Length: 302
Length: 134
Image 1 (tube, rainbow over the protein chains, first blue to last red):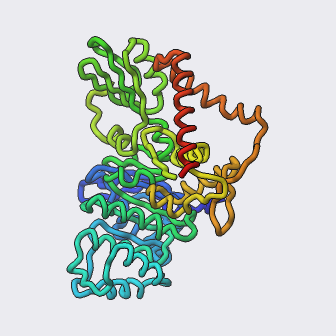
Image 2: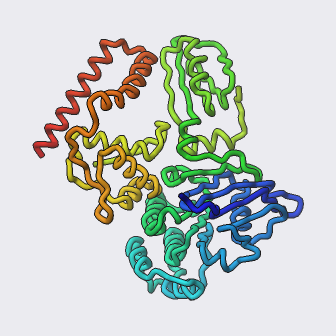
Image 3: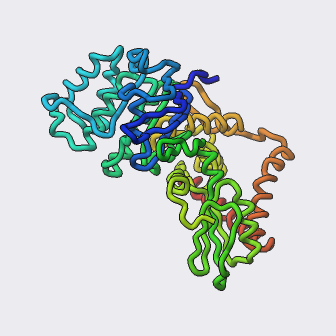
């Protein structure tokens, strides 16, 4: 049904900076039409990975393929099918927004002027403004318009919403949904690195959590939310220490115990219930909570 | 119709949309021949992938809740009796069983559970009446 060639395929990627392994054997694969999240703490290797996708950095080992091509060999073929929005966009200070778009369009096969007009209107931007007068949020909006108008199949976003106010963030994501996915949404792939996971909760189909340059977990968002959960139990008297088999995290404060787990919630719920709590609740974890449960040092682990 | 996603329910996002559209139809806030918002509009509003909304609408069409008219959109179907009664009852068995288990764990006795169901039914009827008046 879907194109079997992944939009992105990374196998055992290694990239060192001196003695430091920024990326250390990372693998991931993104099917066309998916919205894929790359989650990790600062310094986890997100930006290095993205730069390897774009051939801005050469891998020391491993393979990188975009649409089945090696970006170091078929650079033009690969880059003509994608757009990249970095976390800090560099403009030529003498450009007006119009000049910037014309400049970008000169490198592209196509440029959707209708979409450009619609997006300028949506963000309430005047094409005659000088790029130096734009706020951080407006710069990101201009960068996003510049990324969408060539009609790429793959949109790579590196920390796109950090430093933006909540309203601008929302509108940014809505524009990605509304405009980037306007035609053939099943062919339009989004690859986003972020630690503002909540913003992208609904958009993300699949994600990898990376830590110290390695993929720790790769999961479908729906599957992850069904698998990871939290139990809260309360007793009428302080129950004494609760030992549980197979929890990710157990936190006990007075009469309450909070248990975070991956997959074996039924079993843990039975273990807790056997101790006769007066209250027992269960909820799924959001992607951000899952990230925190996986990526933080596991103090208080059972 | 207002869809509200709850990422802490553990229910797949597309299914939450399916369930809420069905609930809106049952409550009368969506009526036969009324259109669902376009995939783009709902996806933007909920900030979810378009493919997720498209999947939900596809599922609603399969279940016979809506008809998908190419180029025009999705419309609520006027369905007399799409399934035989025993088939419809069978579809409800699973959620009812889940409810019974949940009630047991929450220590809600059967009589109280039945009361609660009655109360919710009354509320739904009231909402329906209000919708019909407005």
